Each structure stands twice: as structure tokens, then as C-alpha cells.
Amino acid sequence: MMDSDERYMREALREAQAAGAEDEVPIGAVVVCRGRIIARGHNMTERLHDPTAHAEMIALTAATEALAGKYLDECTLYVTVEPCPMCAAALCWAQLGRLVWAAPDPRRGYSRFSPSLLHPRTEVASGLLAEECGTLVSDYFKSKR
Amino acid sequence: MMDSDERYMREALREAQAAGAEDEVPIGAVVVCRGRIIARGHNMTERLHDPTAHAEMIALTAATEALAGKYLDECTLYVTVEPCPMCAAALCWAQLGRLVWAAPDPRRGYSRFSPSLLHPRTEVASGLLAEECGTLVSDYFKSKR
Image (cartoon, rainbow over all chains, first blue to last red; front, side, top):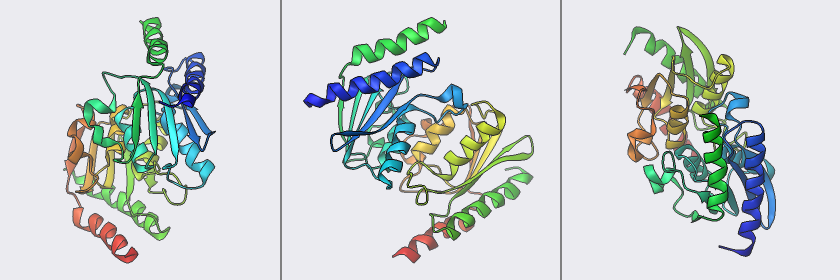
């Protein structure tokens, strides 16, 4: 982990909290390129009626828009929960440089399906702020029961 | 296969040809609900600089928009090439009722990774108009060499 990782993961956590405030599953993401946040996203599946509107997909699309190119090989994506297979495979198409995720998703995390869903050149780090990020989601689901 | 399947796959093929005319990898999709095409999409990754802008993702998002709900359990999606893992997992989130794909993708097709990327209740049929749909893509790549 790098010194700046926690700072950026806290930004992703802020995005997750914004999702929670909108009564969405509280997951957030930011994309960093050369020391600058170029894109942010949080889960909007309910508001948009769109099951693909995950934090990572929104941040990825905003990042490629910001760079006017479809590859994110010089970028790091921070996300508060382990990506699902859809998001992992999307990050593969973008040839993401580095992925940092916080809390594991034992039910729908990509690593349960196949770690090779990511691009072979994508570096992966996990577990940073895992408890804080994971508790936000588990509290959300508890409140729904 | 049902009688109407070939008709709808020909509509997906028309979408694929539209993608080809825009110098995109020629893949197309349509979503049918209760005998009506409710959404169409073709690959737009180059034009949008967005690696997630696959035919299926565009058609899926347009379909959930049309239905104002995030589930496609009463819909069939027709696509000219086997979906990639991103699209398969997206269709899983949408709980797609039925998937019909034409040409296999031996390199990036979801079935090479894990057939369980799709929803367990999604019916799958494949091979319809496979040659026509597959040739369109292979001719495109030949023209790029």
C-alpha cells in the first residue's frame, strides 16, 4: 500500500456514504491518474433503474471520458467493496493499471468466480479500510430487514 | 429455437451492420419483451471512448429504461456474438429471462470463464445465424490488419 492509498480510499468511502444517503447500496469509487482524482462514482442502480449502474462502472466511464481514451492503464481505481464480475471484466477491457478494494464480497465478488476476469497486468491490493467500508454495507442491509 | 427467433436475430444483425458502418466492431443486440422490440444497441466503444459500451450493455440499459425497472426476467436478449464476462454478469444482475446468441467468441466469450456468470434462471440458446454474424466480425478484423 502507498501513503496516499488511504486518502483516496476515504474519498471512495465518501462516495459510498453519498450512495447510502440516497438509499442505494452504499458503495463508492474514485479513479486516480498521476496523483489527481479524475472521476468519482457511487452506486445508482435504484435511482436509474439500471442494474449496471455500479460505482465502478460510473467511475470508469467518467474516467475514460475525462481522458478521452478507452484505456486506464495509468490509473488506479479505489472501490469500497470487492468488484463483482461485471465490474472486474469492465476494468479488464479498460486495462486498468491498479485496483485497490476495501471489503471482500463473499457472495458476488469477482474472485469467487475467476481472478482472471481482471486484466493480467492490473495490480491488485485489498483490505484497506475494509472494516469501515464493509460495515457501511452490512448496516445498510440490516436496516432493510 | 422459436419461429420468431430468426426474425429478431436479423434485427440484431442489422444493429451489428450499423456498428460496422461506424467503424466499430460489428456486434448488435435487441431486447424483446412480450413480442415487441423494446430496446436496441450496437457496439460504440470507439465513438464513446468507453470500453463498457458493448451492444448488450446499451440494449440492457435502454430496456430497463423502457420498463422503468431494473429486471428483465420477462425479456429475451438477442446478440450476434457470445457475450463477454462483463455483459454476461450484467445480464445476471438484470435477471434476464432468455439469452440467444449467434456466433461463439473463443477468446473472450463468457462460457470460457464461467457459465455461472449468467443468472441460474436465464435460458440460453446459441448458434442461430452464427455464420453470418461471425463472418461480419472476422471480416472486420481482417480489414484492420
